[in-house]
Amino acid sequence: MNDQAQTQTPARGEVRCCIVGGGPAGMMLGYLLARAGVPVMVLEKHGDFLRDFRGDTIHPSTLELMHELGLLEDFLKLPHQEARQLAGQVGDTLINIADFSYLPTHCKFIALMPQWDFLNFLAERGRRLPAFALRTEAEATALIREGGRVAGVRAQTPQGPLEIHCDLVVAADGRHSAMRKDAGLEVMELGAPIDVLWMRLRRRADDPEQTLGRFDVGRIMVMINRGDYWQCAFVIRKGGYQEIRERGLDAFREEIAGLMPYLRERLHELRDWDDVKLLTVTVDRLRRWQMPGLLCIGDCAHAMSPIGGVGINLAIQDAVAAANLLAKPLLDGAPSYDLLRGLQERREWPTRMTQAVQILVQNKVISRVLASQGRPAPPWPLRLLGRWPLLQRLPARLVGLGIRPEHVQSPAAG
Image 1 (cartoon, helix red, strand yellow):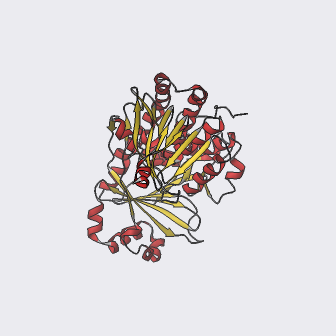
Image 2 (tube, rainbow, N blue to C red):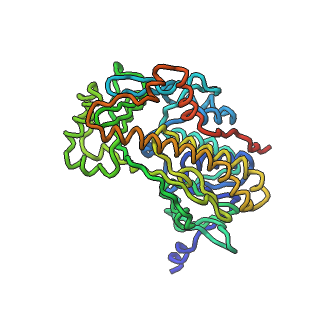
Image 3 (cartoon, one colour):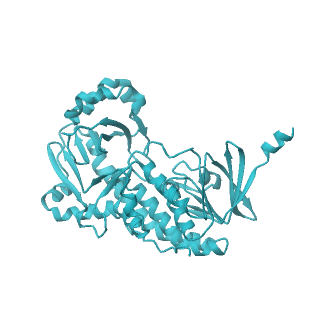
């Protein structure tokens, strides 16, 4: 009886800020706030970061932030590959799309690195700070409300229920956020006509070096060089996964071989459909990113298309902007609603612009290729990029830096 009562009594914790979700946005914000001396706890529902993060791209803007924090040298000691250009093959025509060598950053490349290495790096550096706490296997289930505002989070852990009371809850728990659902925040669906099938295939020494997108008759595939393997994204029309499965795995392997013939003898590595992961693409945005005591950032505030791999970019930029805006006020107590609204006002415009570009590419390029019956020709914007290499700096800036890149302005505690 006493044991049962003890199990049902939630453990309590008190911090200034509780961050729900240990992804890129949550871990970066947790590190920055703790660096400023703000007592912060990050709740991560899984026991570790060893999951399939698909794109696993660290953009030049994020690498520049690591430089500003004095972490870049150690970070780049982790195993990674460097993509200094992005290319696409439309039919038989190979076109360089983006050239990162002219970016005004210390690292003029995208670092291709398992995202769990990035998150583990931030967690390890965070644990060196006295104000930082990371609680794994802690699944946030509900918001705590007091006096008309959010005042904390309820979570389930292997040890039993947990309550974290704080001045601010930051929801960074992704596009399926339990926190934004509990808050009742309105989601605007912007539409995505595609889904993506992800898989890994062995890479050989005589394979091409480049990270490459291939566009052909009704098919699109992107291959990301991860050293000893290719991380492959096979783009399909929305809702078309079941039809592909019904045609069978051999037919799917043949479709891949038709796009990338040199992969043919490796396709037996796709042993069954468990080796092919479906990413259901969603593009959406919250109408309001906040309520008193609650702020949403990253995919929780705006789910991005995988086009350009910029979702992680925007999520981390949100985290930096939030730390710049909130670190000092959090040291004094609960930030005002107007201050939380200021974060949305700063970050909504670059989010809208980026989503608009993604939707344009989805609707005008990708959907048309998937619907085509004949060998596609490069659309005129790609032909211009191939003819005038100077223009490749524009997509490089959009992908590598994003719109309105943020810089670390939050203080470091003495």
